[in-house]
Image (cartoon, rainbow, N blue to C red; front, side):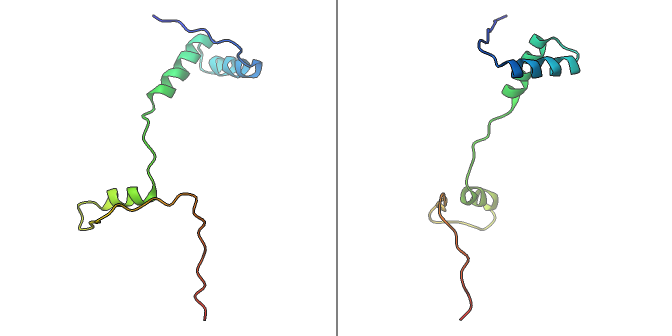
Length: 84
């Protein structure tokens, strides 16, 4: 088995790890392994914008586009004034 050494660990972080390990009935080392295992088990899904997600949702259901919908990022949206 491989080993890892973590230097310069904040004292408060170490104390929180100790409390968590105690709560879960594990050693600090076993708790750190479990935290790493859980963190790396999470499947990373790429973020997609609203336009891309909308097209993917309705693809194959009669909605077809000649060009992909461009994502709107950083654009300031304003409410239109419909009164004359």
